[in-house]
Image 1 (cartoon, helix red, strand yellow):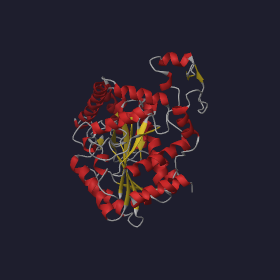
Image 2: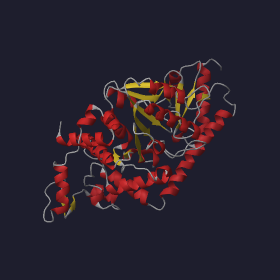
Image 3: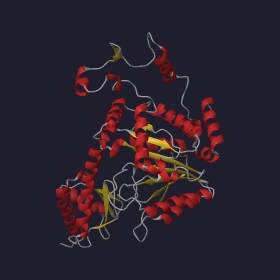
Image 4: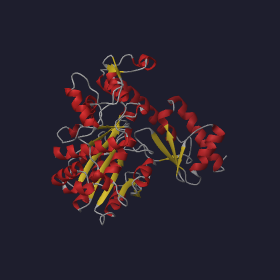
Length: 433
């Protein structure tokens, strides 16, 4: 094992033996090289006042070389903020700005010890880093039965972890904290569990209420008290899009210092929060009372980044940074969120109006981009294909009963027609016409 990896492992072990036990075999072996090209280039950037012949970019007139056909579309930006490599951990100013945003949006974090957010190539990359660092073959990944299918690829296929599902809702259509408890405690013999907490949930658009959130936190604390090491990952892809009576902070805020056996990790990003899906800018943030621990985890994360994508795209980071620094940022973001809230309210109004009888039943939703319909006697896949082939409507079938509808991409005035089409297709398949 590399000496730097050993040193990082020793630091983590000294600071928290439970976190050391959470690391995967790759997590133990990874490190960020301090004596390679990047470190030498960083040193040269500071000291090479005559010529800097270290970094693999081309320059002209003492700035990054560029094509006019590209720069003409980016004339507001300095070439150094577009064409140079971004550091592996991300543009420093962006990391600082995102941390300030986290603290504004999650007031409970203000007096807690968290690391500086590390820039990822959007959220999937952040989750992949978590999987690489903490998931070994056979490790349990706890998640609800209504989840984003990419978790299976990221943790199950890539890292051979065991996906352990529990029902998202209980019989009262509230968050199923008892199911979560059973799933985690079933791993007690392993002594470790990776718990994925995705709110607002994809695909259902559900975020827990305050009392439900307390129950979730208590379950994790009880499991930690019972000797289970927990990697608590909050997938906050749709953070901020809260429309009704849900919590408005990430569970990361509460979990960040609740127990030495719980390592809280926040994965989020500009992708959905700032409506810039194609820019692919995400973040991963660790919580620990130990600055040495935070530094070690950052070094290992940078090692994963260096070994996979090397660094994220610089232009995207520059665009996001400028947006966060703009005086119009908050107002414009609230305007877009209000549009999505009106669409969510319209969907709920239509489904609660009685016009669709018992044909269109739905799971509780109060946030995010999506909602899910539930069919009892007909196949969701049959509804999907009928909608596509006969009505020109695209939806997503999930399992036998569930149909995901993304109201985020449907104009408010078109929602009634959309659900009328879904109703007609469902009636036809149920022979109700």
